[in-house]
Length: 440
Image (cartoon, rainbow, N blue to C red; front, side, top):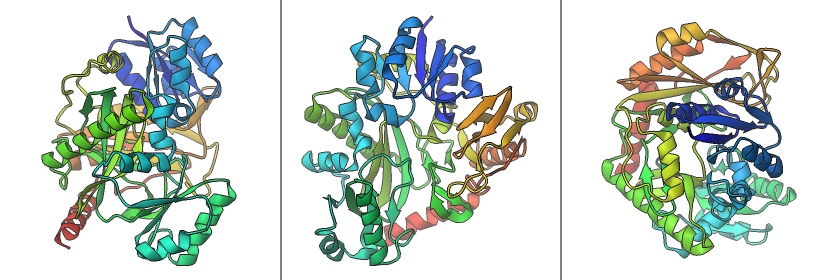
């Protein structure tokens, strides 16, 4: 029996835990707070500690005699958890600190793509202070500006002209805010098109793709409101998206291969783990928006719930460098809707009790994944972040959406969700937008 240490405690890690057990493993977990579902899947073989406490993590892994570890969130990877575990002979599915800078530093990522002439890169420039920023903004035009802090921001640090920035003054104010926090600024050209998530498994050389997913970052229906970590996501029954062709996927895979080769050349480290390319299809072809060095959240729920290949075997192949064949997935559509605290993400209500009617969820075929919650005296409470992902799986997108939406009714608490994710109305809007972009 394979024993696995799972690091992390969100909905992404919940579905990872489920997939590991389905693959025949037993698991133990190292969490920053108690996710009740993961704890049950581990038979309460868990430890609650800071995810940066690598020495405690190593001791726990050795105590449990794990065969390998797998890391869910990006933050511990960016500060070297894989290096620390591997130095103690604990094989780890997740990139080393050197490779993790693909997500940890947007400047590193863009500069790498520029140096190795990766075609899906875009125009950008980095800044350490306000000098030259005005000149660059005037050069590319304020309407073409995207401002990003260099480091991790939990999906909420990017500000785009027209969405969050409405004047030159807004641009300079936000840049100054980043500098005031001792950060570095990167300004990129604004892209127009439709984004999609392409998550791949990587064994150092081989790059194997998974079904395409589209995330919904905005907090409110109609893509309104501030950016979030992701309010939900959907995937189609053919494992593609209506506005992304098989040729597009082949090109995206080629770009991922080139990036994996570039990071190996640049850092002398092989990238082993999950690599997630956020691509945008534009009039000029596919462009890379960002890389994530782990599963997306919510996208992991769309992908792992329909994965037919053995997840444990895939992890072993990543570590052994033997990830040679395509993976199998059900030809099913999926819709994930995130239930989040009232007021999220600006002023979220915290510590509200959440009550789940599990029998009703099972009856309609909806799946539930606990995210940023805690369990106290047998009761589940929300935090200030996303609380529960509800997944619908069916032959068509409309059927999957109905299951997910119905499923939200069986969770009570001070929570809300986007009711429009996965609906035909939203899909038609995205298809029309893509058609308009390609006509320009």
